[in-house]
Image 1 (cartoon, rainbow, N blue to C red):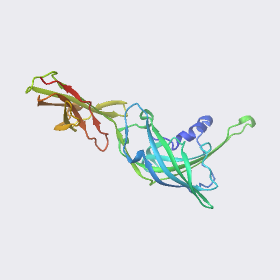
Image 2 (image 1 turned 90 degrees about the vertical axis):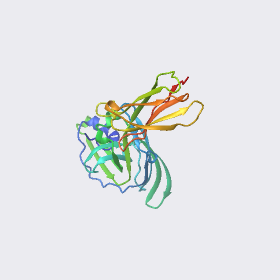
Image 3 (image 1 turned 30 degrees about the vertical axis):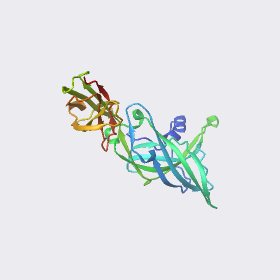
Image 4 (image 1 turned 180 degrees about the vertical axis):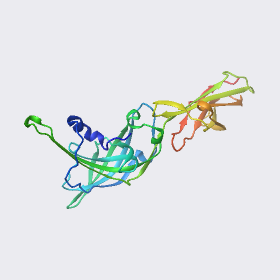
Length: 277
């Protein structure tokens, strides 16, 4: 499934006309996008329901006779998976940038801009293949329309361009992790069983499913201490289940920690307290 590039900007006019936009005849202005940073250089981690707002900053150099008004003329950042000409999926900026002029010449204006890419997983992410490294592009669009049909005539045209090679960013599936230590309380020297479960976002079905064959560290923090210490590493089995045993030594908290993978974000379980008597 593929979205129309900068669909947020163009959807209003498209909805009004109900027509596919013809190619415009006007020349596309030469825009230069540089210094693009997406999500402060970090991976974008997305769950199954909550929208994720991704900050974007970049420098835009435009011809001085081109005004980006975000009404008819738009510029912003797009993430795409696949090729620029025929992408497998796209994530577009909100196209409400805040830009400050930093330099001018007789022919150009340079601006420092910030914007947001809002990712709604139910609308924008469709399959496991979306958990990968995406490419970054700068995009431009201009819309001309006359939708007054009182004279039995309407017109609509767009000019669109995209410039790839502006960077890369990972999009990852969010993970959840639990930990439960029992029995509680327990006598010193007796066996404590620590269970848990590692799941991750399944965008296609909008649920969290078990993540198997993954290492998770079992950690312990003694009562009154401020840091956790790794006890052992446990591997998830069917359904993402975790289970191991330790000997009860002192009061404290047990938790599991998952470091994440290329496709899945890290997760840390809440500590479960055990009273050792």
